[in-house]
Amino acid sequence: MDDNKNFEEKISLITRNLQEVLGEDKLCSILEERDLRVYWGTATTGKPHVAYFVPMSKIADFLKAGCEVTVLFADLHAYLDNMKAPWELLELRTQYYEHVIKAMLESIGVPIEKLRFVRGTDYQLSREYSLDVYKLSSVVTQHDAKKAGAEVVKQVDHPLLSGLLYPGLQALDEEYLKVDAQFGGVDQRKIFTFAEKYLPALGYAKRVHLMNPMVPGLTGGKMSSSEEESKIDLLDKKEDVKKKLKRAFCEPGNVENNGVLSFVKHVLFPLHGEFVILRDEKWGGCKTYIEYDELEKDFTDQSVHPGDLKNSVEIALNKLLDPIRKKFQMPEMQKLTRAAYPPPTKQQKAVSKGPAAENDVIVPSRLDIRVGRIISVERHPDADSLYVEKVDVGEAQPRTVVSGEGEKRKVEPLNPPEGSTPGERVFVVGFENGTADDELKPKKKVFEKLQVDFKISDDCTAQWQQKNFMTKLGVITCKSLKGGTIS
Image (cartoon, rainbow, N blue to C red):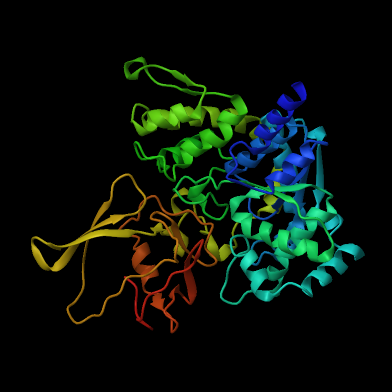
């Protein structure tokens, strides 16, 4: 009885909150004989943010279940992922990742002495590994390699060969790290099924794959290092955490794409076993939830207000971030952070002549451009040449927009990539990481000065100075207006 109970507890810990498990029968058969060996890898590119607490809390679950856990800092993968990190910064960023991941684990009470930390280049440049890469390239088709990396490797019009190598290396990592299972987000699913197909072709065993759901960011889409407003940085000050949570998408009663609620489900509940809504007595007083489903039901019924939820998450999150902030206040950590993530180049940032001149340089990142879904279009009641549109941009209520065009002009909407959702950020290539103005001052004419260079290319791609407009899913296009202007 005790052995069976122990087995069931381990299965429950390993699989709770996962979206999918590939190879569950194999997982069970391994656990009947011994503890599971599992690894989680992260490419050392953009700064880790609070969404990284989601895999960290699962690593805590794995350790509670007796698993042997390896954390891989995938520095070579980072180099292969096109446009993410230049080679000269990889060593510094890998150091940053190691310090910050360990600080996160310590913050949530995970004993790091029970973990094994490995860098990809520690073994991926060996003779044996290199030969296996060549062997794999002799059996993998270009189609399969591209398909496997579609959700993970940065997609561009003219992909480099390096991006096609990425899935094969990740598959081989399972063999060279000598693990039974790989853990990652569900966005890695195509790479996991690629590994299951091709590792046996080299005579290696098929592994178990454990997949987390993708936790929404603050704007409702995926929380991304390259989308500033979608994430809370691990080193953000308390006032920045408050400001970002205040702006976060958290529509009353709506649990879909709710990053605030998802953080409670996938981080705070697994870590603490409960969650407390803090609120004034006149609104019902504080309430402790020991089951997430009860909290979700109360939020759906609107007996929990978004403001109270955000405030409670803010306090809980800052408790997790405080020890990380403290560690990175040390001079050597601040020096490492500046070296690993240097500020933008001079042409991309303002030349400061004092506090008021901070944003004098006119660059596309100063515009907060979002994907919008047109809900309705009606003629303006007071002007025949104008239209009134209701547009969903991912906020609690649609926006009302008034527009009009001359009668002889052909007009087409700009189309975001398939799969885009309202509210997703639109950026210009090369200006992904800037901060948008809180308000566009009419006298500055920021939009007007940028709009002069908004054009449609000969292949119907929206551009600024021949640099593409994009979302995280790809380029912005129109149907047929080659050489047209954008307004």
